[in-house]
Length: 572
Length: 49
Image 1: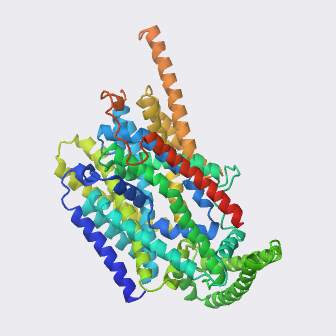
Image 2 (image 1 turned 60 degrees about the vertical axis):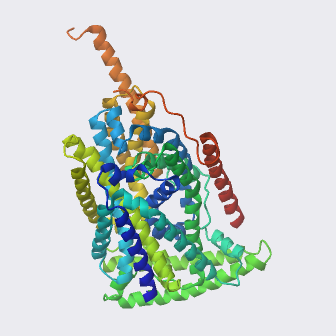
Image 3 (image 1 turned 180 degrees about the vertical axis):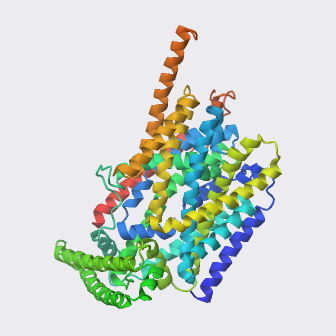
């Protein structure tokens, strides 16, 4: 990193943090602290929704996902626009009309206290753990940049996020998200342009894309229906729909964002605009990852992308083995580069069906590179059995640090930190809101006054920040972060969504039926995760349908017994 | 408990969206946009592989 990079990074972060703290300094009521006084226009709501969802994980891990697994991950987002329509049509008017601070308040009014508390608890557990993942991502960047221990960088990043959220609340979050979104858009566009520019000039854009296609990276649509296949169009449209419906409709970290809208129309428009933009945005980020894979066909790539783990092996007594592997890796990369150039030339100039041999040669060279990388990962594990051998999250970061010009590196890192600040602070504000509104205020019955409640909210933010930092210590072992965060959500979202759908549409079902149904459904989802090979997106469907089905069943049983008692009389 | 969402009398008239005239049309635009992306992704994949 050059001095210019540090200046760009420091300047951007100082401006955003200072602006947020300045704007959020006068929050004296819970409406103001949690919902920014409900004064936001639709475009601010859209930016806030997108910025809360797009954490540092999106910009670090998603290109890595595209690099390693191609673009099929985009299918996960295909259900999102349909979910936006459902939430805009049904949930937004209800939440606005009731003037609630959290969606779980509605459940007490509709069912009972225990259903509200159960749903709030599931949200807190899931979101508290997920916030650990969002703190982990920028800490990882800082650890690579400064060479510091990861635990220390988690402490530094977590501390920064907590300070920012405690001092500003939702107002700080909402006011700074447009600026953060602008930094993110500018930085990612610049990275894309530089990546394309640094590809070999004698290979056409079509040649580059066809090369990515031949290497299996341009695969955004898979029509096969397979419950064990994580990403196909059916899991995306159905499972992704349920996931998005639950995340945007019932997860307070998102509900809080659009409750800041000044009217139903502003909140609805904010959500629907997100439905228009999210799919192309994810497509662009994954395409960046796919092109990164092509880029590394022509440019030197490290044997292992995680420099911290590499340094441990180099410093160990097995250094010689590592150097030997590195030498072999470089030779294989050169071989692969020649095969890639050959295929690219045939794609551009050769006859249409003369590329089969060249494709096979490139595939064989690629397999040889993969085998060396697998051997390197094994060596890392042998040196340190606790080491993280998944380096997908470091792929984009490595490109940024080694290939982007001075100044732009600082800007991309500002993207990572901005995204992290906006999502983490949004999540911490939501955790704090649910703890206070659904827990503390419920216990004290609102007898302590709003100033005291705001003070407790700040304390709750601090406590949840500490919890998330503790979990962040373990996040590195969960593989690709962007998958880990969605798997974690899918374990709870189906059940929560089912409770809300019963509340909205099954008007006669009461608290006891839905509460027991939710407990059984959650146990079934966890059993599904532990004991079956079913892909995670389907957990959302399983949980939701089980809650609805069982709640209706228990309600019928309850009615049957009540009517039987009514007929026979209590003393018979 | 009754549904609090329907407990408070008739709903106020809906404010129209800033674009597309009606909410129904806005919803159709979002759904149509998704369909368009799916078709484009499919063609993109076919073309480049």
